[in-house]
Length: 328
Image (tube, rainbow, N blue to C red; front, side, top):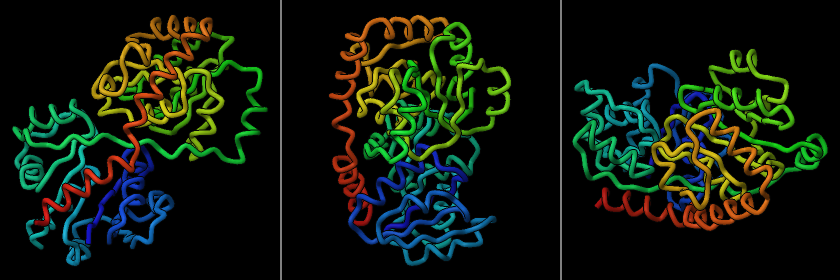
C-alpha cells in the first residue's frame, strides 16, 4: 500500500496536486493529513484517510502497514524520515518549491535517506542539487486541475458583466506571490477591475492599501468560474517552483502576465505570455493586452497548446513507475 502524507494546514497548490494524483491512481492507497485539513474534501477515490494531531511522530505506527510512503511537503518528509528509521519504510519526497534547503544535519539526512526525490521543475531540481548534492531527482511537473465550472458562473458573469477583469489566484503572501505590485499597478488603472482570489497572512495589509478597483474574493474552490470571466490572468510571483495555477490559466485560454522566475519559464515563453519585473511593467502589459484583442487571443492559444502535456493522465504513470522501481 502506498501511503501519502500531506500535513499542510490549508489547501493550496501542493494539496491540489496531492489530491489529483491520489484520485488518478488505481492502486491501494491511504492518506495521512493534519486533523481538520480541507484536503480530505477533495479525495474522490475509496482511499482511507487518517487524521493526526501534533506531535505527529506519536502517530508513526499508523504507517506500519505501508509498503512505501510519499511525502508531499516538508513536515510530511520529516515524519517519513522517522518512519524509515524506526519502521524501515522506504519513502519518496515531492519537492515543489525553490526555497533554500536547510544545511543542518537533520534536514540533509531527510533528503539523502529518501529512496527518490521528485522535483516539479528543472529549477527545483537544480536547487535540490545545489543545497544537498543530490543530482538524481526526477522531474515531473504539476498537473492541470480538471476544467469544470459551477452553477455560480452565471452569477459571477452578471456581477462583473461590464468590467474588464484582471485575475490573480494565489495565497495572499506578497513575499512569494507579489500582490503589492498588483496593487501599485491597480492604482493607476482605475477603469480596470482586479480580482484577487485567495487568502493569506498579508490579507489585512493588502486590503488596507488597495484602491477600490481591487476586489478580494477570499479562498474559492470554483477557480474555473473565475478564469472563465477573466480577461487577463496576472501572476507576478517573486519566486515559484513551477506555478501550477498557471497551468489552469493556460488550459482556460487566458492571456498571461507573469514573472520569469523559478520554473515558470519551463511552462511559458515570450510567445505565450508577457513577462514583467515591476508594477510599471504590469501596467504597460495590461494596457497593451486590453487594447489588442488579437495579441490576447494569440498568447492564450499558444499557452493552451503548451498546456496539453500537463494532464494528470500523462503524469501519474510516471510517478507510479517510480513507486514500482523503489519497491523492486
